Image (cartoon, rainbow, N blue to C red; front, top):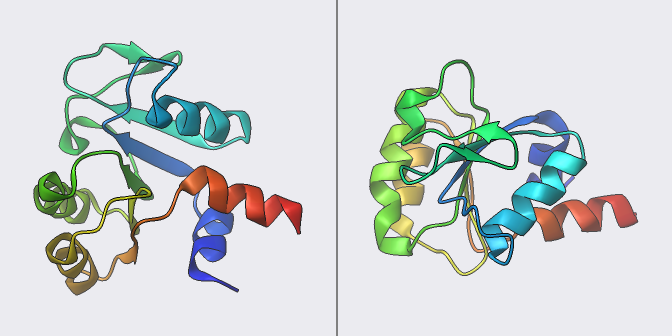
Length: 132
């Protein structure tokens, strides 16, 4: 089983860092899709109070309760601090969306035992899974 498939099958709570309230943005489309597939999505955006009917948090550390996957829609250079937050939060996975690659962030996460996915879209990976 591919790593992405394993992650999508065994984790249900996804914090989406950089989730936009704008339905035209890829982050919003992916979050809407995942929510529709039964995943719990937790928006992380300091500029919003609520997105897709879910309470929005300014950062990962503000989220009460467990986060399994940290899905990141931010510029690659912004990801190392997010990786550190994901480690501190006790997440199992750091997932950098399509077009985002940062070896420093990946190393931070891997050193703490997190699984890491870079440059892949969670929605596209889930669609591949359900097409099987």
